[in-house]
Length: 499
Image (tube, rainbow, N blue to C red; front, side, top):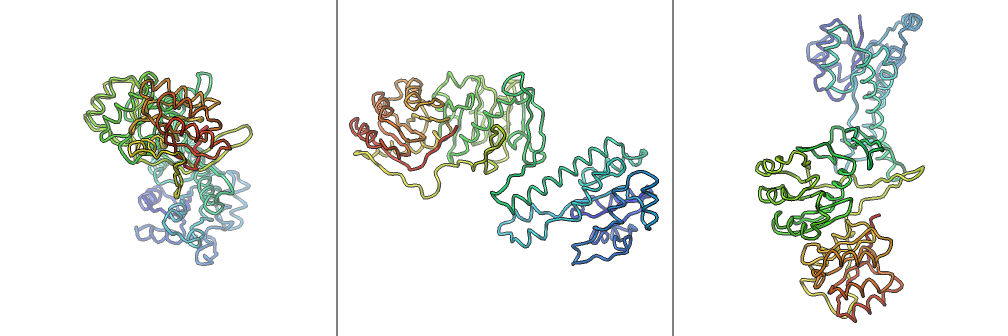
């Protein structure tokens, strides 16, 4: 008679699955609460302690950790191994139905105590999973209730196939790896890094056709960026990078905002009373570069906004939703990718970058930290309109590659320069993009000015106010240049490099 051991925290579908096993002639061994649930469901079950002739001890901390159990799971499909087990009064165990204490859910609760976290570190369940998974040549592992129907179907048809057993074993090792990573992250804090990544899809290629690429997610079942692709061609590697950059630039604003990104560089960012007006302003910042770019919105796309967006060729639009009318308009463009996001969050709270033989980790730059104080360092104070534009420009420049320069009028960019090895060249690029709109604009710089030349060039173009971190040994020269041009200058004391 085939034998199954059942020890689960999540009892979803348990009784039905166990009833199916019993109907196929399986002998059921179960621990503690699992055994009680099965008996309440009208099933005959042997307690683990009865099978091992060893009682549960330490308030249930030790139940399944016994040679009778693990010998039964780990025994190879040989007559010698079976004879050894039978000589000890035990036998093969052919199926392990196991899931784990909810450690991650426990530590995610506000104010979760360390003692509660420790009590929810599963030991026996992890060991059962690993034993069954290691011996997948003979043993079937069921660590996910979603697999119960498939296992019953194959058992009914004559037995679980080797391919399915191997697939279930991989799922088991993935589960224990993620579980251990969560424990290490909770107890170790910043001292270590363990990642559990779930494969989402193999991409057509990477940045270039000769490079292979895959997309992974931190959470099982997540789509690209945690969202859902509603329409369009398959997302590419470059699309995903641009989507992430555009999404971060849009959702950092509490007000209605649109960001347009091309090759990881914002072309235009704007905040307005409506999504369609924010889009018009963002597009006007640099309509040439916006062609073939990515649009990110921090509000659901309306029919009116969709009618405007359909006139421009873009690769993707990402937003927290699309109205039915917007979908009808935009899905008429068969290749346009539409990505719907579940919320306005940027997760996780860290960033990783590969370097040769290593990985860099840093916390996400969510903007100025609490308590940041801006200081007027020029003779002239900014006007109320300049203050509003400076605050918008400062937030926008945080999403431009260093050396980042943003020109803004009101709450819209009119010229963006970045990614150059010197700052004054970025100022010149911003001026070129802005044209006549530079006159009366404000300028934000993600880092201090090492020389006064950037301020002087901006003043000649008609910029009236500047915000930057300050802190250069030549700050006095930049301040003097601003004063000489009648510009207002504000320092923040906070740098926002983005390499």
